[in-house]
Image (cartoon, rainbow, N blue to C red):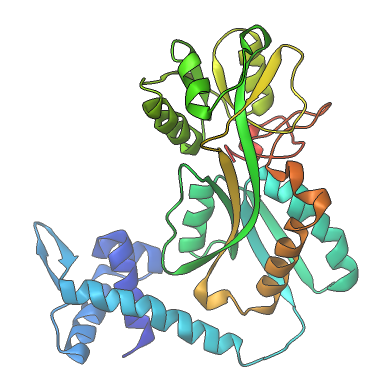
Length: 330
């Protein structure tokens, strides 16, 4: 089977229409249709069927598309294997949330200048969904993403997610509301009547809040959204509501952070790459360096992306630029 035809089938599975595949691959709808027809003859199975004015994959087509992902990954890996043990060389495109970029990726730039001067990083700040989408369309090589233990992400089988660091989160409340501690459910129950603040660029923390509120027997009143943890603390200070914040970070004078335990709320960061690229020397190098850096005492602890004392704070970890957007709701 011609791998080009397999690629078209995978794109049809992903995009859902011949026209979209043609636009994405720079060809014509007629060519896509012809190539899928040839592939059907090669396999001896009907791969598509009419669906109104469009087409859809048959069960055999869906199954072949699943195989095609593995086949194409293996072919790409084979190309990379032509230069085994080669010195890392090239530009690695990365997309990720701000805390991961600032606290973990940027420090590598100066290290690479000395240790691997032929490796260059191209960095773009994106929320997890955006970064994973770029990975799917081959517009980035490495995605730095996050999820929460109570709102786990589902990764496509075509990629591998390597765990990096984890970080606990708590509930940010006005200082005068900071009553005694308790379990997470007990803490949430005490704030059932309050307004709740969530991230404006990512729904993960909202999912966590709704899950825990359900366990506490109420539906949270989501009223405000902000992609900047500095702004979230300002909203809390102004009495606009309560919201999740990274634990172990300095807070505004009028904000208190209540620990959330039983169940814990934990942010989990990942380095995500496509299976066909895992052995590419620059990608393997950066992934290994990020994994090693995440285990260092000075880059974990407060690693859960979160804000710093005298600096603006971003979404999910250490000190950050003022926008949580810079690191999303990470």
